Amino acid sequence: MPRVIDQKPQQPCTLGDAVDAIARAGFDPSDDASVSGVARWLGRLMANRRFLGDILIEQLKPLHRETSIESGYGPQAIVLSPLQDNVFLRANIWPSPSDHCFATSGAESFVYGVPHDHNFSFLTGGYLGPGYRSDYYEYDYAGVAGFAGEEVPLRFIERSALHEGKVQLYRAHLDIHSQLPPESLSVSLNVMHIDPAQSWFDQYGFDLESGTVTRVLSPNSTETFLRAAVATGHGDAIDLAEHFARSHPSDRLRLASYEARSMLCESAEERDALWREAEGSGSRMVEAIALRKRAMLAA
Ligand SMILES: [Fe+2]
Image 1: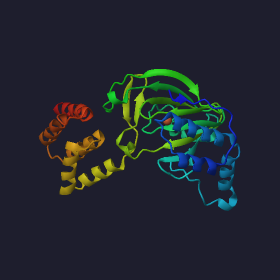
Image 2: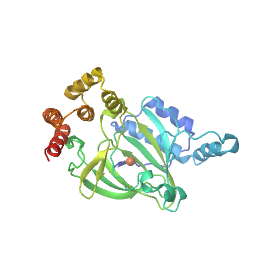
Image 3: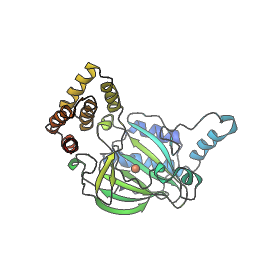
Image 4: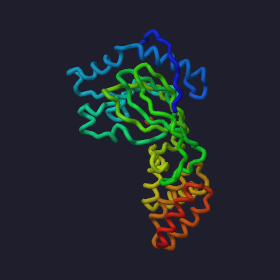
């Protein structure tokens, strides 16, 4: 489960002080000293019981009716600082089943009951309320190819809540959680670590009962652009897709290059030949899907 960082009571600080101090020091989730230092600043910000209310009130004042709170992650998240040197801060709102938005939008829109890992590390602290609860698991990312239905050994760790004052480090590609709503509206504060390479490493959804990968959750615009470019039938796009299929470091891009080109195939034989090539691509994930595609073509 995420590593719990013991916190002594901290002197409150302003949001600006915390943002500046964390930007100056940097945040390296793999370095214990860096994690402790950033956690201390997060603890100081959590001790400031006014700053978030001030931000929300400012946005809600009638004179500011036409503005909206900067989120980038939907109405559940509030971005508290711009990205600086791979770090930004945000607040997350966790409605309970008795909150109106829970009833109208449904549990899934707040990621409750959607087991997932993260392709980034982040420090999080319970700022307000009893906190969402999570069933925590760990898994071996290096052992996963990443196709839907793939069996993954999941190690259950515990169920616990991110209660007020608790700080923990979620470790990329290791911690899985399935969240349950809090008993009453809760808020967490996050220090997010953004690695430029992270978009090439997928975030997965999991089925806990069958112990399998359900799908890749992380968006990837390069993949979407590649699929669209190939769909136009442009020769250069097809050449690029062939190149990606052979040598791109991301399995996901390699699969997308085969899927996109298979849409252009004019016969089942042509499609089968393409997926036969994919079987020998050297990617376990692409190979597993290619085998399925060929079985479906043969059926
Ligand atoms: Fe999560």
